[in-house]
Length: 325
Image (tube, rainbow, N blue to C red; front, side, top):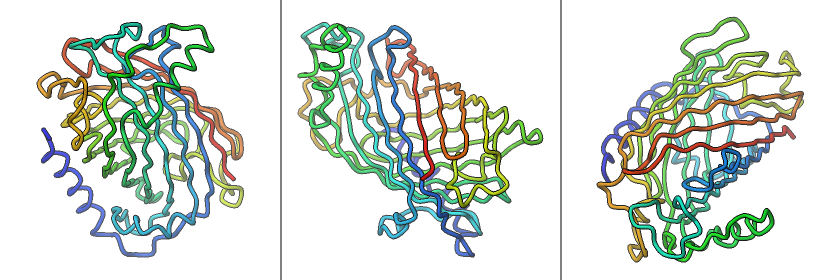
């Protein structure tokens, strides 16, 4: 995998930064959270590349008992810990889904489903958060994207996708990722600038990246919780939140199985060669969030630079609903 040493180095650096203060008086949050997102590019009148996606995220204290936590990174001393499971489903297509043959030089059809078991360790005093997770799932026809997209297009009277028989074949998704976030600046309670560093090593994606997150509006501090809190943990927090965020990211890409195929099953009808992959990709996301008590709604628009040679930039919209139980 190209650029693998860079991603491994960044993961090791995150481990070194966090382990020095890892073993003192961490506390387990009692928050119980659930959120769902749906993303699609149809809102920009396109139907290609990243074309649809969903996530389901569940945070429960009981997940702290998972043996997977032994593999996750410790956080800053005295952190508040949240444990969760996040399910991902995404689908990708070439520029023209009406073609019933392989479009050479275009993006392959691909879809995956996987779960990430993760832990966040947040120090409100240091304005710092470390998130690490282990991912397991599969890429390929077993994800069901052919039937899902075909049915959706039938319901909305859109063109039938005809190339899913040439999608990336079934293969294992196994990966490890970590993200370190640190507040860089704040303007009272109405503005925050947060720096982010991220790395992932795995059979689906291998990359290293960095970014900035800007939050502006009526909101609770970013490092106070995960955006929402259960009723028992809302004392002193604003009930009503209404704010906007802007996020800019850049990644150095080592491997992307949705374009290059999985690492174990090489019997794919069509993949892009490593030489076609854009090794530096930038992405920007603008969001508006409205929340009251234990319920939040988010709408986002994301733009990404070309991911392979000869491709276009792309954009999509995402809607998210979150609840504290």
